[in-house]
Image (cartoon, rainbow, N blue to C red):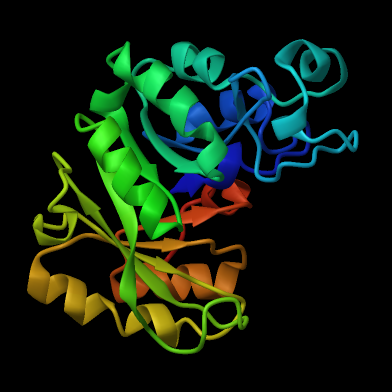
Length: 235
């Protein structure tokens, strides 16, 4: 189980240090979305606009720190040095900051960088070759992106280079919506044939969660990690 952006908790909201502290004992992978401030600081947040109404991309870190609970990425990464990091870059404005942070440390060795922009994916792959990389595939599986029933696959590739599309996949990642688990379940035999783990996100209801795990999904990302706190019978 991977708590989405640290997860929702009774005592902590996602994208806060408190949420990541709650998530860390329950997972080996921390999920982080990143935006860059106007002065180039990477901040953990799902959206550019924060709860205060300020936009990360047009504010300095000093301005955000005084008014928001969104943490700096470098602080979260340093707090959990043994965890792998599943990082989505939300906007191309952050590319230079990503290069600075990951190019000057060993963070890349425990990170998968992802984005929904094929152009940004290639830029990230060339700029941070030590990281694993995720990119959208050209193929859509069921429905239309953004239609409410999901499904776009992503592949994780090691040692990314300009020939990104020809590298061996490490993982099949499938977006799950509020619709039927069938959309994800159909990918299980494909993943098995290719020898790839299957990762579904974001699953927030107990019934599809149990069904997907019982069907053979290897990992799920959830906004509601408390669903995993009790053992589940998946027979």
